[in-house]
Image (cartoon, rainbow, N blue to C red; front, side):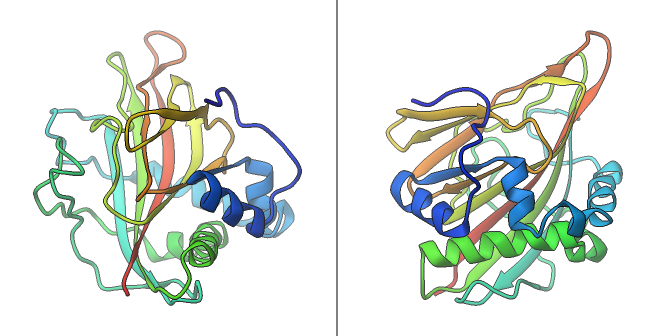
Length: 249
């Protein structure tokens, strides 16, 4: 099992990401390589600050069966054609998971405030959506995609916050893209990926904005450990963009 911080090998290409997904069922993309695939820091210089700031007013998640008040989120529904694009906004509908995939918060329709259009059209945000559509379409040709986009903020107070209160899980989709947007004043938050038999495959911590993981949800399970304040008696947060892709044909 691989462990630790994200390694920085030779610069990633989309072909290499597709190969890693097909071989291992997951790929971990360091921030510098992710930003390069999105067009580079110069192209994103004006987009990234506004994109990150859109996490600052996420509403509280009212559906936490554990009673927690540590998660904030927005949600959107999108689609993409079989060739990987373009990604299009669809009429809003509630988020639903069965209890098989989410025994904590599943089994009900969850209505969240929609992600703002300017966030979805932001060059950084749209770039991440397009990247996922291209890579996953190359890994699973001849299919269109139903896409759900989630902005998450997990807040760490005295009792910490759970990025995945359901524990190790599958999302019940085909592929998942998970990109760190900000990590402020927290410790913990280690990501673990395992096969469906429960054998650990890798563990790592997303630490830099745009550190990104891509996972084949049909083959693997994933989870994230609790986050705690880095300094006792303070508060911190961990912001993520999570995008799920489900085949439509």
